[in-house]
Amino acid sequence: MASVYHHGNLRQALLGEADRIIETDGIDALSVRKLADNVGVSRTALYHHFRDKNALLSAITEAQFSHWGEQLTEVLDDQAPIEEQIRAFAKQYLCGATERPAHYNLMFGKPIWKSGEPSESLTEISRATFQNYVILIKRWQELGAIEAAIPPLQLAQVSWGMLHGLARLLIDGVYVDHKQIEEMSDAVTRLLLNGQAATPSSEF
Amino acid sequence: MASVYHHGNLRQALLGEADRIIETDGIDALSVRKLADNVGVSRTALYHHFRDKNALLSAITEAQFSHWGEQLTEVLDDQAPIEEQIRAFAKQYLCGATERPAHYNLMFGKPIWKSGEPSESLTEISRATFQNYVILIKRWQELGAIEAAIPPLQLAQVSWGMLHGLARLLIDGVYVDHKQIEEMSDAVTRLLLNGQAATPSSEF
DNA sequence: CCTCTATGTTGACAGTGTCAAGATTAAACT
DNA sequence: AGTTTAATCTTGACACTGTCAACATAGAGG
Image (tube, rainbow over all chains, first blue to last red; front, side, top):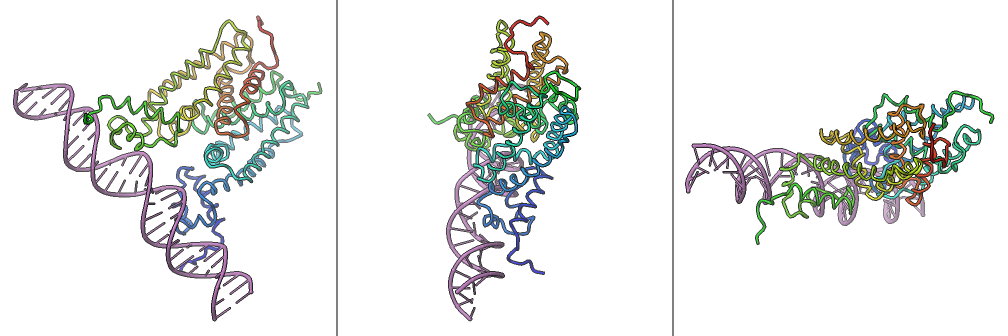
């Protein structure tokens, strides 16, 4: 009955519980001590598995990046007209971000990227995620659906920035409301399609 | 010689010093105690002028909003072709944000907007700032330079979101670099102008 | 069986924001 | 003028934070 001295698999337990706390109560509610308490372990046990709190967050973020990438590409149906693909992608992005705001902030926020420098593996996986996005953009450009005069990398930066900015405005509650996601996805799509509307096939 | 018990104008002194700390050392370096120390006053003296730390930040942010609005509209030269105006606006936005990153985060970040609800006056001034932007967009639309099929409010949200997102990516150091501001402004402009390039006069 | 190492614990330290209670001064009223 | 009132500032304290150093325990390998 007496709890064992060695937890067995503390690292995973910490990650799991931390993830839970972040999702339910937000990032500010996650303290090392509270986390340890919930797992049933001492305040400093964590430091045998992670260099510091930031390392813990990096690990969580890393896992999140995988989910994120999958979710985004899952929504792409190659059969659908490109306009629909873009709209679905944008909507999925904004919904995903607003449904798990704390996680989103973690992935693209300052705490990890600026303050405590990101781990090697985190840098790697995030770079890959963005790279995939650039490829996606390039494909859409080649299909003639999207402004082709702008170099793919720049267009990727700018359009990603657009989704990122809208996500943050939604999350932080400035100017915009969650109910407007639908319309916003629509506007994003039309802006990218530069005028051409509702015409599925585009052989150009 | 002995310092007076009553400071005289502590509120202003706190605001000034806080602003200075934020600009030089970032928002994380601003602690109530350090601030009081620098001003030469006791830790809790602040609470006679601001409800809590958040109220102090709100006050600073409010002042910042005024500067911001001016700086943005100053750059608009009605004589220049619209393309140039948009480019200048975008560049000014991104430069302004990256030059004073902590202040920018304060203005459009979660701490003020979500956590501690914003003061009445802050809500007001920020609303006005955005409203001005919507008007600007509408004007550009009416001049035929910008996609007119999207309702002005939505286009304002989306384009502002784009600048906001790019600013944050720059500030937080994800994917993009400060040196790319020029190209980014260019890409933003081209995206908004949906294809029409370098043609100054547009009578429709 | 005994040692070594991985893992977990308690104690301590320097921080943080903020409340309560008391000191001091300026302003307002008689 | 003198006295009361209100504004302002100070010290003490509390609960919280992340993290280091030193010590305890247990499982693995010789």
